[in-house]
Length: 338
Image: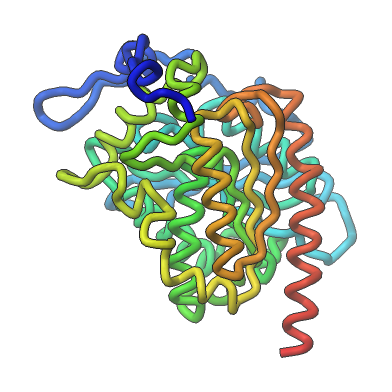
């Protein structure tokens, strides 16, 4: 075990690193960030994938972006594509589905799988602390189930739905999954088959060995994740809150429902992520609760590498395809038996 007294001193200013500066009125100023920048345009976009922006919630100005492989528009096949609902990362205080990293990733998944991808925007903290992001993300599911949008009604298989996200998006996909599992009838005809959690954003008060060892990781230092939790959790909550420490108390009781529903969970991570110990613990906890979990851990790397590095983006659909096909096949058998 690493010595906490010698390894726990951060050497990075998280505010400067994230270019995130809180204001006295409870808002924040977000300056240009090297990782997150809204630079996408039709000229930058892969022409093999169609994308369309649609409004969701007028009161909170939430919206979504639909990705569809253009090849299906010219196909005579009536077979619909799996539906992947995607939630972007950014530690709940940064980011947008319009950021180039997330846009390109969704475009690649839609093309390489292929699938219909709906990337959903949610409100950010500290202006809107958790559970605002979860509320908006759940609202996106209800919008999908009732929408008359042709790209979804014509091409998406609502009975083969997966929730996916990187980092805070993975945390959101998990929390939305818990809500959806608790109200299965309310989201019909959407039928969720599984969760795809990339580099899960997770924390806790007591430092793990990997957090101590990678305290000053240059890509995602622990002080940056601490700051994100400080400004996104409900006022007065610490990092052992259930939104952050997903294994606290043995996990949510709704995991029993997820087990009964037969959902599968894919957890991808890297050993170079300060949160790797917690991600492994999360997978172990879910397995102990009887949930079907597939874990994929790459050596080295860093938090969010699947989204940040283009060559890694192209590898993810291979893992996803195996997982999604397995989840769809096992669910079909379960439906027949049931």
